[in-house]
Amino acid sequence: MKTVFAIAATFALLGSTAALAAGDATAGQQKSAACAACHGADGNSANGEWPKLAGQNAVYLVKQLQDFKAGRRANPIMSGMAAPLGDQDMEDIAVYFSAQQPAPGKADPELVEKGKAIYLGGNLNSSLAACTACHGPNGKGNPAAAFPAVSDQHAQYVETQLKAFRAMQRANDPGQMMRNIAAKMSDDEIKAVASFMQGLQ
Image (tube, rainbow, N blue to C red; front, side, top):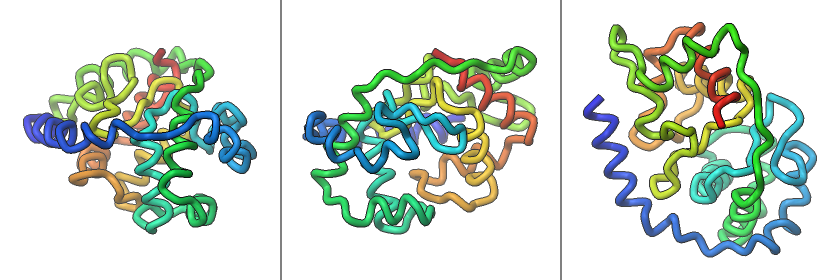
């Protein structure tokens, strides 16, 4: 637990200047036209396989685009989409999507209590840290540290990403934070917290 807070504090300090991204939302709307096919024109994807980008913090979005372009995060489609983008393009697109309103999601009523318990309190038995440490009690993340917003996100997408971190198939998390956390989660815990995040507003 102490390690998570120490790393979070470090990245908050390091990321404070990055949080001042100089993107142009108007330009970003035009440049995001190609993104709409999967993520929706306003960043609210209709398919749970693809993440909602609406309301996501711009610093996190820029980092992901940079990671796709550099090969630090593997996805054939996104790597191809990010390849022609320059730094200004990424900042413009990120600022546009971050300014959009995420469509509210709903949690599975049968998973809410378990998901809430994990999100707010972790699991003492497995030393699993609470999600609130980095993503906040309302799921809005920490833009200065480039920690993503998770509220209203598709449960299917969250579940897929947590399992990818657990299997070490996704490795672009600072300090291996998410890989270390996901490694302590069971399939049932992942499913419950993903559903809770989908309904968190």
